[in-house]
Image (cartoon, rainbow, N blue to C red):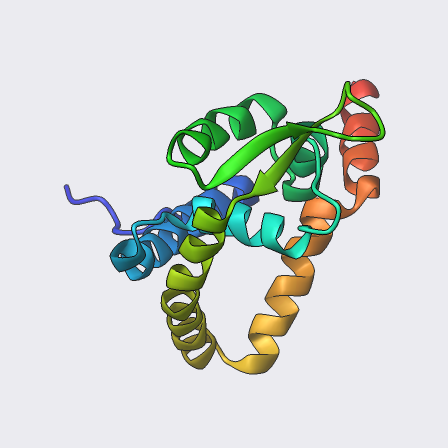
Length: 158
């Protein structure tokens, strides 16, 4: 008996994870010449956007919708390779800020054309309107606090 190539499970979480893994693989392949993985490129790009007000690890984890410990593990090689630096906030020395270094800025600049090409190819394949709708839906899933409240309410009611 042969198994179907794709899962027929009704589980939305499984479908989202499969799609995420597939896109990660495709973008990792596209970014390979830059030496960055898509997760690293995303973090460095986010730090570049926030260069005037560098975030703490906790703030960046919230921005990226990541667990703080997972982000910490992802940041270690970026710090080791000189892409980021952890510094102290001049106004509050207890806050450890993540700053993009010039080496990190160069890495983002190297990766940007590869990322842009992959994004454009995906956009061409998927279509402008469907891609915009998908992005909106995914951001809503990632950022809408009501979703957590609904799921917690349902779970607690049992």
